[in-house]
Amino acid sequence: MNQLPVEAGVQPAWPAAAPLPADSAAPSEKAVGDVQRDPEVRAALEIRPALAGDVVPLEFFFDTTLRRDYFLRRGQLREMLRGGRHRVWVAELAGVLVGVAITSARARLVNLLVHPACRGIGLARALVRAAAPVDARVKIDGSDGDPRGFFRALGFVSAGTTARKPNIELMAAPSATNADTPTVLATTRKEQP
Image (cartoon, rainbow, N blue to C red):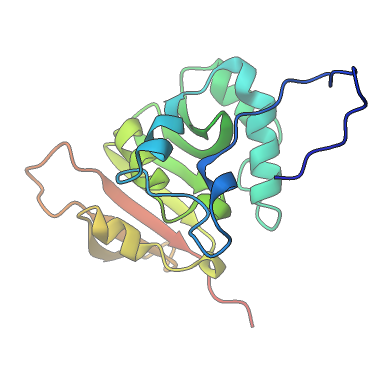
């Protein structure tokens, strides 16, 4: 890990951050371990409801992660954190915001996003579990891959498309009697030429 030079006897204005498990990994190793299998990652992970003080890190996260497609209008995060219409969950890895899940008042998952550098280690799955949605509408940028495999791995099955929006694929829980299993509406964008 690169560090700025410090003059003898001069302390930096900020405390040194604890190194992430990836900081000590050899370049050929996976950058971050798996949430389920790696105890260091599991210990460094915190998923919690967002607080009013999280608005600036959340806005920065959305700005830097979604440069091409900002799917929340300016000020909407502040409204969500103030009002009772939405619930925002954050995933932090060693104190760094790396994922977000947003549910509506009716417990519908309306946004799910994990930083690209932290995908594939179980954060989205952990966020969905923490948010415990009744159903979900997930907006996915088609250039980031097909989300259906992720939701199928959670037990969802395709239920067709809507007539109003043919680019929205409905994915339902495998059993209508299982009220604890969410239904997912995955929005995929058509490929750009």
